Amino acid sequence: MNEQVINYASKKAELCKNNDNISPRLYDEYGVKKGLRDENGKGVLAGLTNISKIISSKIIDGKKVSCEGELWYRGYKVEDLINSLGPYELGFEKVAYLLLMGELPSGEELSSFKEVIGSLRTLPSNFTRDVIMKAPSSDIMNTITRSVLTLASYDKNALDTSVNNSLRQCIQLISEFPLIAIYAYHAFTYYEKQDSLFIHRPDPSLSTAENLLMMLRPDKSYSKVEAKVLDTALILHMEHGGGNNSTFTTRVVTSSGSDTYSTIAAAMSSLKGPKHGGANIKVMEMMKDIKEHVKDYSSKEEISSYLEKILDKEAFDQKGLIYGMGHAVYSLSDPRERVFKNYVKQLANEKNRQNDLILYENIEELAPLLIAKKRHIYKGVSPNVDFYSGFVYDMLGIPQELYTAIFAVARIVGWSAHRIEELICMDKIIRPAYMSVMEEKEENI
Image 1 (cartoon, rainbow, N blue to C red):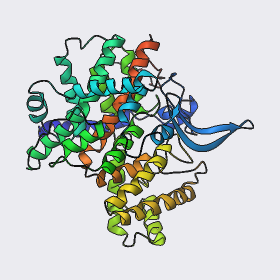
Image 2 (cartoon, one colour):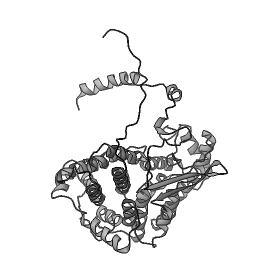
Image 3 (cartoon, rainbow, N blue to C red):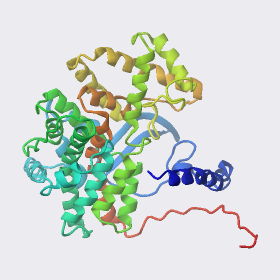
Image 4 (tube, rainbow, N blue to C red):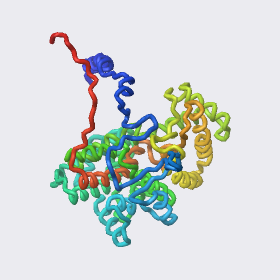
């Protein structure tokens, strides 16, 4: 890298910091909501959707009262959708059909949809070699994003934004994402970690969760419990309302008239941020640090003492945050975490990780109390889905480089549903207003 350019940018960055700084006072003065959220966490209403719904409070006797969190997909509670499946029945494809088409599939429709998904689990000739293998990176999200944009050049109708063509493209990308993610990881481990290289072809008869585990592992093996837990994780991460950052990005880019590949690439770029899809990696880094400083995982006193140090910015990353706790919308509970926890216990027993589970459960109990006490937060603090998802992926043998990519494998379904809805319902470009607080300069130029 050019040392002169590095030094130049480093010096000029200070100029940017001085000239681009806006006083927090002005946000209050002009009533501008930072992050499009008010001080109570309520978001600015930016659109309407039929795809999903998040509930964190209810109006009782004219007053807003916090309630246990709820997540709905197309009129169904996500918990009910998951509970409606058999003990080892995998439902990713069924719920994906629901989100995309707006209704649950019949047995015949589901079989047809699975067949289409299976037939599309392939990449263009030499794509793996020429696109994925030739530019390996530890940043799997960047590799997937680059691959998505490159796939556009293999599509003769790449720029056709009609609903039928966009739906076709979305279904194709949903099918291809697991391959790209796993192959990108294998390319990275082969070239950068000097590990063995193996590329397993997907099995069109297997589900998305089963293919992910099969393609990831050298021996292709996985248990029914492992497939069920990963399938559940994919369903829970599939969609989360139109207001999350990457889904809003999807709708903004779609509203400009852009093509499917560019839209999904933009959503990918949004998701990879540590404040969004990369949050569970931060939880795992924190848990590693806690394990290094807490000797007895069953000692609530020892755990509390160290959590207080984290909150006081004396430990871990000195940010004063217990990652995996709290959510922008939910207060009493995150429904995704509630569902997930049942499967976490099941998997921890199968993997003999009960001791780690004790640590997680104690932090889940203690952290909200400590946060409420030190931060004077009275609306409630509860663990979010990221608190356990990294632990689950770790037990499944999924490396951290793939955590956010697995999130993307699931969330592309929600992005696709929102893209189609935006194409059908909206005919205006999303163009929010920014108020200028620039000072006019009077000196001669």
